[in-house]
Amino acid sequence: MNVPTTPLLAAAMILSAGIGCDSPTDAGPDDVELMRQASAAYTSAEAALAVGFVPLSECIASPAGAMGFHYGMPARLDDAVIDPNAPEVMLYEPQADGSLRLVGVEFMMHQDAWAAAGNTEAPTMAGRAFDPPNPNHPDPMVRPFWTLHAWVWQENPEGMFMPFNPAVSCG
Image (cartoon, rainbow, N blue to C red; front, side, top):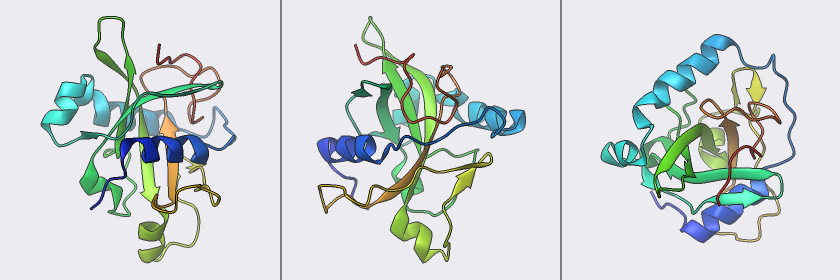
């Protein structure tokens, strides 16, 4: 599998992060707890690297907040499986001492892999539809993908599943 280069993936994530909608009732406590349990072993980026996660982006920020650094599990990016126990991406916020702190997870599904598995509707997790791929992405080499961010380690004042978190910073 080819993982897009860092600048391309960063641009794709920013451009695909639609405005979206969010409701505090979308996720049940069990779903959120499963996501926390699934990511608890990766509170350090070193732990994620040790099991096969790879850096996918620099720290991504916008006026709406930040997403942080993305560390993804390549084997999960094309499997067309949505599992709260196996997020495709861990999200890390840089700290003043140079370390990275786990702030959330991201579920990512390549549009072509999702369709090849016979799916015709948007993927969902915890009662929330994934944010759609950006049909106008400027780089044709970046495969369109669905995303769902879940801020399970850092509260997001805009909502659990919003793409950007104003409580997270790249500074």
